Length: 278
Ligand code: FAD
Image 1 (cartoon, rainbow, N blue to C red):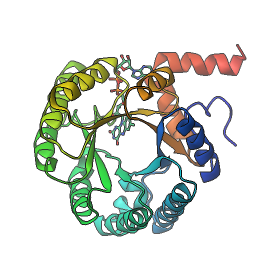
Image 2: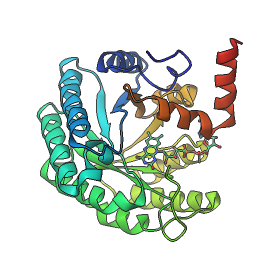
Image 3: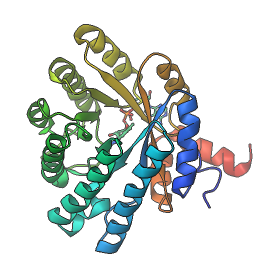
């Protein structure tokens, strides 16, 4: 059972609790991106189990008529075991999702996985006519070229700053530099993408910038934020724009919760207050 302190960031341990949370989001005009927590499996059975759970989840989303999609991590569905395992399990999920008209996002992990992830995305987005999206990271030096390659792929792209601690040979390490590149990537995307641009950020500067870019280029776009982070802003944006919340759930919630706690001092204070009961 997830302690109340973690339930701000994680929607329980089961698909049922996650979908209950999705229903409450939909009542607030917020759509949901559901993610089963899990990554870096070193054997086939947990990867297959998670892939099977995603296939059930897309059927449940469709049957319950919720406004939701899913987001899958490559190393959760076998990437560490081989590119072929990852592509096989991903295709099974995308196939089931397409049958039920549920969109599939592919999360992006560290830079050693970028090529295989983008290749899988590109071929599936073409085969399934845009029912798939992928995440790209502004902190990687290669991303401008990747984004140019993705401009005519019929899927959606989520732009984030990048969550992984990457080596300086491949990544910008300075926050201001990452922000500069993020700005450039968003401008390029709004100018050149037809399929829609997703802004995966809580940063007020880029929320405002995306709205300006939409006014200039008219490109479809959506905001994406994490469960438990800037929920007030999510409600405000949902009144004006398309707002999606990333909803993690599952038994492997501890390391995700720990990452959320450690990334901001306010979150550590929130945890301390909850533990002390104040
Ligand atoms: P930051 O640069 O961390 O902060 C900028 C400003 O945003 C802050 O000054 C503050 O005003 C506001 N802010 C940020 N966080 C908070 C907070 N917790 N509470 C209040 N205000 C805050 N990364 C990947 O590498 N791969 C992925 O697939 C991926 N998917 C993602 C999906 C979604 C929906 C989101 C939201 C993020 C995803 N990320 C992913 C993480 C992303 O790369 C960043 O690490 C993360 O979003 C932090 O960057 P930021 O742009 O939100 O803001």
